[in-house]
Length: 127
Length: 149
Image 1 (cartoon, each protein chain N blue to C red):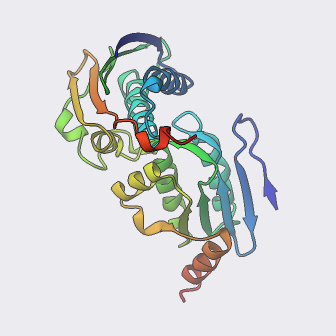
Image 2 (cartoon, chains in turn yellow, red; image 1 turned 180 degrees about the vertical axis):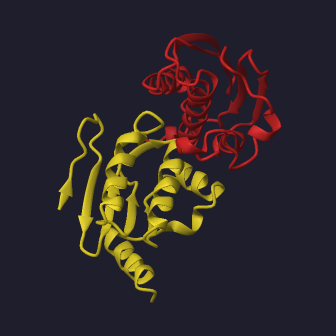
Image 3 (cartoon, rainbow over the protein chains, first blue to last red; image 1 turned 135 degrees about the horizontal axis):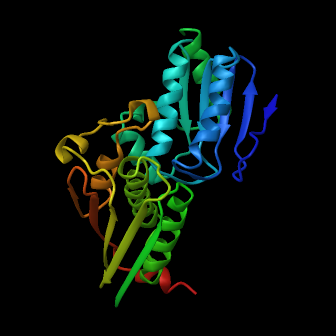
């Protein structure tokens, strides 16, 4: 199932994969101005009971400031209610530094979205 | 090389990208690395966002001023607002501190700015606005790369 958020000039692509894992692929520049539409879409899936884990694939993101950190931390808080997991893929070197400064380093992963799905499946099923 | 610029704009979130873009063009002649540019843009974005969200509480009538000086391979950027100011700068600069937890701010803005600059000063008084000044040095252009072809 694919979700195309409405109303944004940034083509942020979102996929709901089997097992309730949302793959979010933000594109362009993620700042305080652009974070809000992604927040609404992802929160809607979490509170609609459809999402139990999130993969943030940042490979198409050209820029991110601390609004991106706030966005991911906020959705981790939303997921807390359903005990879900978070994996971050393909950050730029600058984004990686920001995640590590913010204590999100343990959520960074190497590999593909499929690898991240397996990792999240393991977290979600307590393996 | 010496250069100088001033930019003023309304305190609306659309202008965060305008400030990043303009200040990126300003240092483009130095041919910075992708990572240097990315860090520099992040610092600008943090300071401008602070002015809009915290300084002016998103009242669109506020004006954000940006001033930049290029001296050799070092840029000095001043970003100022005439908004509400910060009561306790030292507290505001602590990692994870945010005055607006309900607004999904990470509280990492100043920590990131300090990490990505060579020098950062924050001058603020309650009721009389905030001025953030940072310096960033760009590394010398790598001759090995430019001699290819």
